[in-house]
Image 1 (spheres, rainbow, N blue to C red):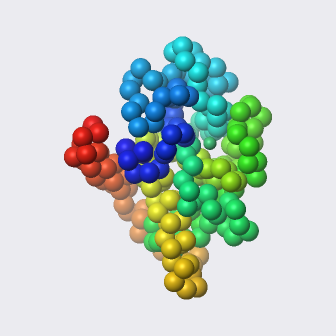
Image 2: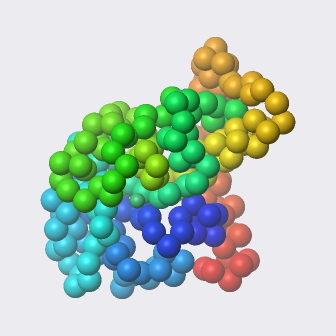
Length: 214
Ligand SMILES: [Zn+2]
């Protein structure tokens, strides 16, 4: 579904914590468009494969680093969403231009543009993420930390759609971003919409079924 919604391509990965000290993650080489249960590894918080005999993704430390630092996080997504990543290439913080974009105002940007391969780099990404639910990696991608796969899907979708809208709107004229005061109002009204992650998940699940993908 992430591939279908163009939130993941041939790389990037989701992981899910299944115990305090271990999580599921797909293998490095499996196509993201056709992952099956056989492509899923069990990995510990050092990034060591406990179950499965194929290599884990090069950037498993993104996930391990977030899980080490944030016991509250159950699911981590890492992708390379092209519109969102544009905001790491300019001296301009992420703005909200769509109403749902209020959650992404000032999304932190991790300065290290290289692949996150080591434990130290994973810890550094987790420090940039802090208590936020998402951050961006400069010239590279996104990290989303949430409680469920459906929430990671929602955040991935809305972050990219907000960024895409900003880029397109800028070609029409000066941008009119959501103001801090409006963001507060949106926070209050969206707080009543806790059904959204499931609603959007079900919509895309149905689309995937109609497309014969599920
Ligand atoms: Zn990456």
